[in-house]
Image 1 (spheres, rainbow, N blue to C red):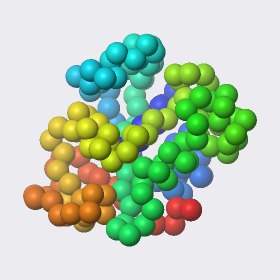
Image 2 (spheres, rainbow, N blue to C red):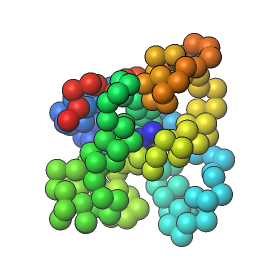
Image 3 (cartoon, rainbow, N blue to C red):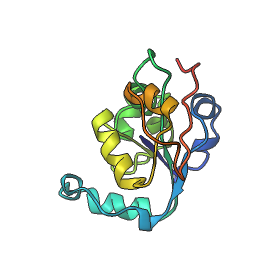
Length: 161
């Protein structure tokens, strides 16, 4: 799962991001920020981050890849760059965090650490979400029961490098 802050003007309109991502699956507002997982709530900067994330809408993205291709989590994390925008500007100046992040923890984008974390975050933010068979097979490697729920999943374009 990924998240893009609307406090980073122009980020969603960049050709690079639009070329690589489908439309956001949903828009979330502050009332969708809870309940907060206990492991995250204990982090020192978490309160500051939650305040920032709730200060305006965020675009939450459910990212998938066709079966047999690169792991979407790794691809998204590469596109985001290092967590700290200052480090990102030095080490990966073309990354999203280098271009749109300001300072920690306001680094413009979020990405799940791995598939397990993505599953937990999706369950938290989209409790009624049901994957279609095609999307689940592409992202998790097995079939699903039921059709897509009230939130629609969009495919990650296949042409991402």
